Image 1 (cartoon, one colour):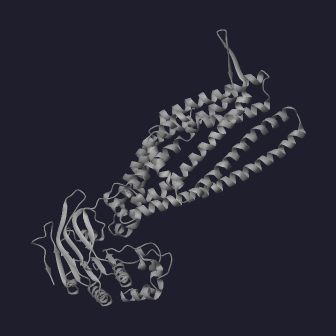
Image 2 (spheres, rainbow, N blue to C red; image 1 turned 90 degrees about the vertical axis):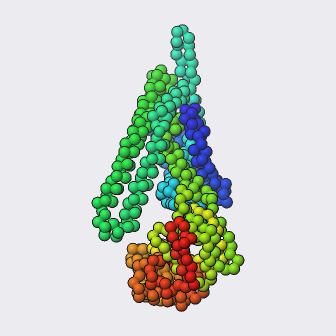
Image 3 (cartoon, rainbow, N blue to C red; image 1 turned 45 degrees about the horizontal axis):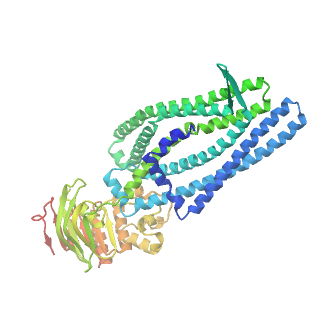
Length: 577
């Protein structure tokens, strides 16, 4: 059949097998019976809508025959029947929409949870950003996943509904259209159900044409989504860094960059327009010419008195249904192209978030409670060595200050200990206990100040009194009354120095066994730095503190010192107690 030839090209391609691999899990998951039940219910409602369509064709036949016979009584009865048909149609369509949307959101929720779990598990999200192989993972999870669920449901239910409709109305056409008889060179040819064959041939021609004209549309749409994502991400960066850009008078530079990105969108859009135009020409031409074609093949039989006016109306309605059914591929080509593009993007993301990352740095459990580093070599993704650490031992309750010039790998060392730096070799022995890492610029999640203070622990991990006390000790007493205020963007409201004070408050609440601080007082004045460190040492006497800093003022708060050099550390490193 016309719609199956081009579709076969889709289902034999590896990307469609990959698409099915993405779509399948929910239907075999713990929610499989709910999923299948909802799908079956929507399908049955679709069948009800098809049945109402068949009913309507017979009503049309009877109604126009009653008009032709001037049978007013029958006309009024048929008008009442039309009201019943309309009521059934409204109930079926409304119910179908409700259950369809329920199915859609449940599937999307399950898929989103799977992707979020894999993306945010461990340090996967950081690894993806670090590798820079996948663009805009957030957009793929939020938008592509939503659209993939919507399109796959629309296409699958539409396909089955269309197939049933096609078979049903084909039977009607076969029974009504009769036999076309004509002679060629003295040979009499009879074609039974000739209108059905006309619709098949017509749909085959349109399907071949749309495949020929639009086959590159998948690649063009994929590129369009990529460029749109980059443009949106760049604007988001402007919003997030508005203060720095404004201070630097960078508005003009940002506008030029955004215009350049949008120019890329515009260039690709020209190709997208070309393919859309071609497919639209086929779609509209198929529809408009098809209407005339239906009358063209019916006229001879009507004027030969072989068919009634009512039968003409039933035939034209059925012919339209069959013609559209056979050309399902023509009308869904753009959606199929979009689905393939989305599955490709989501498949790429899934490959990366599900990929096991080889770790050359060995992690093991420390038996004596100390954190040990042995023969550690840290490198970039291309294998270039950043730094080496032969041996380090951080005892419980010890105070260490790690120093060195910019770019020698101090922050990278802390990332390696945290397990988020992937490249290198050596061994790190980690003791049991709580670890906390304070970066130079603290991340603040969306929500209230108490959410930011307790992060990453839940709100009920600490009492309001504990939160208030921690803020007061860290010089943020003025914000105690705002702990639960909604609608404040604290990442913008707090200054860099206040964010660093909030980080110390987190430490007082979290009471870690090992605390790693990366330039965590760089935005503080000496008096506040002294106040916070003295408070920290006072409140957490058993916590091992490992600081990375350039400031000499921090020396007095530490007992042990380690100086990192560029790559080779043998002669440049020293330890003193």
